[in-house]
Amino acid sequence: MSRIYHFDDISGMLTATSEARLDPVTGVAMLPANATSMAPPETTDFEVAIWNGSDWLVSADRRGEEYW
Image (cartoon, rainbow, N blue to C red):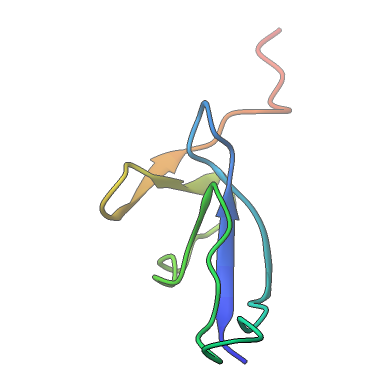
């Protein structure tokens, strides 16, 4: 099986990884909606991988930071 990477349909943010299911007729890995077989880049703290439709981008992730 091959690994697939799921992303949010609105933000493109990486949400999960899983193993692709194989088509029972052809034996080829099936790719569900909002998923890609292209591995995202490594991210550090306060970064998130975002799928833009053809490639992964790394963006700052400020969720959870306190500003006061």
